[in-house]
Image 1 (tube, helix red, strand yellow):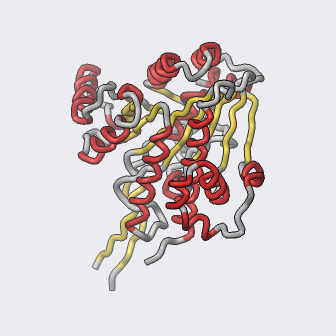
Image 2: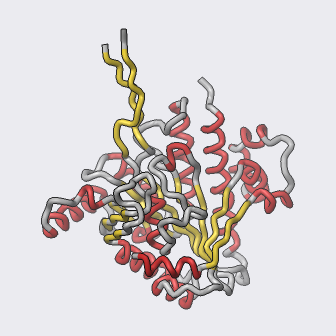
Image 3: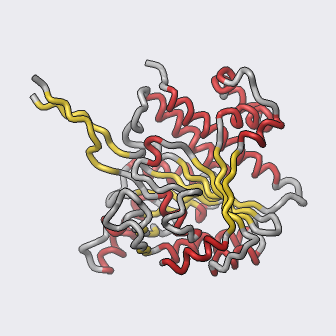
Length: 56
Length: 285
């Protein structure tokens, strides 16, 4: 089963973020670049657990 | 005849968005930058926010999806979580500090593995485990028992950094009983730790760090949310990281009418709020 659009979009945005963070880190090689620091918050678990409960 | 009940069975959200708001003193009802939602990362996307001062110093906060447990709502492929985890780890690899947020009263194997992976990418004291929603997990026990539990979590995580416990209530509009009645525990201590680490790393000017500590923001410090797009990914990745770009072939395929580098700025949308608003937040606590 292929990915749905939402999945593709979420992954794309993660890739965009990786690229942006890479740029920020890379800019530190330039002493005259602005001062930047990065804090990432990552969750241990993904969202809500959706269950389909079948009652016979 | 079978009856199918499809619904949310329980929540395992870590409350990262509310924690960001509390750490930088965004008003609970200001949804123009960080939105607090119980379904945030089941349906939404990674987000990036920044605090910026008048001498062009910037503190970025990246709010990343959780990657373990169950498929986010709407996801269909098991590979999705693997891909997501890989990219979240790539994001964390660029971070100066990672807050590993969990909302369990026990440490599971994958959490220990996560901490180990994240700590390998930076000084060990810059991977910070945070037990969120401590009002749920620590209530009913004495302070001594809670300290023992947090110490055990730290040992189980094999973390050189203590487990910070935070509770941030009043930010979730879906939580009608508490919305607007802002209560925080552990936020000041965590903020102090982060600012101390940032100060020791000398990434930001001391004057900026001091303002973040005191909450005495002025009109020259801005809070901004940047929304990311797939187009930005394609453009920026090719421009900056050819190796990663090769793995992002799918992105390029989807954006074959690819934007130019100049288009990158156009697809980054920003909402800016002067930080005098932020300062007011500290008075609402």
